[in-house]
Structure formats: C-alpha cells, structure tokens
Image (cartoon, rainbow, N blue to C red; front, side, top):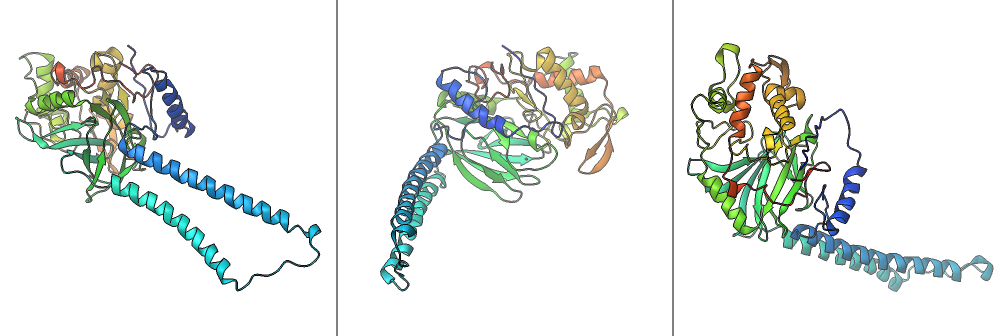
Length: 409
Ligand code: CUA
C-alpha cells in the first residue's frame, strides 16, 4: 500500500528511451514470475489480438528474412570461393543477354515481396474491420487530456456517459474506438492493447481493440502535440464482462451526490458551479461536466467520477491507495492542481486560482483568486464524486500500468 505521486514536469527531464524498453522486458520478466508490480508495458503483449497478429506476422517476416539471408550469404561465399582469381587464369565467362538468368533474378525478388505483401494484407484484413457488435467508445484527444464517451449509453441524468483520462473496456470481446481530436494531432497508444492510431481534428478513425486479460494498462499520447505532450496519459481499465456491465450500469444510473448543507462539499459545490465573482474566480462548471448536476462544460475533462479515479492531470499524478485523493500527499497534489494547474502542467488551459499570470493559447491571462480553504472545499466536493463501491473499477483490478515501483494498490 504505497502511494505513487510521482510528479512529471515536461521539459525539465527527458525520459531516456532505454527506460520504457528496459521496463518492458523487466515487466515481462516480472509478470511471468507471477508478481504483480511495476509497469508491464509491452508491444508483444499477446493478450490483445492486435499485438498477436503483428507478433506472428513479424515472426514469419523474420523467418523469411533469415532464409533469404542464409541463401544469399551461401550464394555469395560459394561464388567468391569458386571463382577465386588464383584458381582461374582467364577472365570468367560473361552472361550478358542471358534471358533465363535475368528472368530468375527478377522473379525471385518479386515472389519474396509478394509473399511479404500477402502477410501484411492478411494482417490488415484481420485487424482493420470493426465488427458491428463491438462495444463502441468515442475517444477525444485534447491538449493535454483525453475524454472517453460511451455513445450507446445515455445516462439517466441526461447526456452520454463519459469519463476523463480513464477508459473502461470489457475483456474478451472487440471494442470499436472512434478516435478524433479537438485541436492538434494526438496519438492514441496503449502498447499492451495494440498499435497506435492518430487522433486528428475533423477526422474520425474507427479502430478495433481487445484484450483477454483484465487489468489496468498505461496509455500515452504518441504524437508530439505541445508543451505537455508527455503529460497526456491515460489508463485503460479492462474488466471482465460482469464487472464491466456493473460498472457501466452504475455510471448510467449515477447522479452526483448532493452535499449535506453546511458541509465543505456543499461550499465546494457552490464554488464549482458559480465560481466567485468578487475575485474573478471562474466557475469550474464552465469547462467541466458532472453528471446529474447543472455542470455541463465540455472544454475540460468530464469529472463525474473524479472520486473513483486514481489519476489526476491526465496521469500526471496517481493516487494508488484506497484513500485516493484523501491521502495527505495526494490531497496536496489535488490542492496544487486546482490552485494553479498551468504552473504545474505547462500548457494546461485551466485558469489559475491564486491570482498568478498564465499563458492560455499564447495569451497572457491573470487568474482569479480563491483562498486555500476554498480550494480545499472544491477538493472535498471533487472527492465526493464517487461511483458506488461495486462499480469501483480500480478495486482489485491488477495494475500493469503503474508509473513507479510501489504503484500498486
Ligand atoms: Cu497529445 Cu502528444
């Protein structure tokens, strides 16, 4: 029960490229040792059909390449050896105009390329179509966060069920993602689930994913998209069918709990909905949606289930204890985030609430002011936005996507 509150600051430290690769192999080793720890980030994760197809295509391509390599090497050494100068006085016979040889020399590469093409086309034909009965999830990438919507599930309180930065999907069945972007080009990439897909503005790409193993997997934006590209993470939470159904049903029925009059949550609710005009503090509801309340903003991530979520700032922080954002260190991060998110996450479009200046799409703006107590009230309100216990999709789900050692539950 350790807390992972690793703070990622883009620009201050670059992650060495060897780390994810090393982590992948280390993760794979640990996983085979039946140990649930650390990050298992692996493009060869055969629990996903996408990775399986790519894996076997690669194996065939590599086997073919080895055969070709051995054949060509043999021919080369044979020729060099046979026609060594010290064994022949006369120049070798010329074969210019030998039609049979030329046909063979063209035909063999054509056959090889054709064979490799068949492998590729076959894999594409398997992976590209999305079956009609697939679970549909809409993916929206924005600077610098993700929204995941379930277009087939309209909540009882109105509006489509949506979750920010944590995508919940069923295992052992195809999931059809429709991926797009609200601004620049992003990349949807959860290595364990499959390859990458670009999230492009005004373009909707459909893509099928699946996995046979329940668990939490790490997702990243894979397309350089601005100052906080590295802080544009998400979690893929794959749940077995029963749990998935329970969770989605609870999300559908969810209405944000009404805070008790006079409580910190109630004060936070008021600030969330109205802001504070006397100090120019903008209402959170202007940009965020909370299901079952008047808050219907779409500029920022959906916060309906914030209290159940374990990531903050699009995976910038993780709170992996059962207390989540009530754990002292995590609570501190949440406070910092509300207070001045553009300071802790470059490029964040949230206003500051400590009166400091910040850049928003190249424009210098000045945030309103909330006191630390008021920020804590908003934090209390956010933490109260919880799904019922049986729909807590994190609880008991093996976490293969933790960002640091000890990041398990
Ligand atoms: Cu979005 Cu990189």
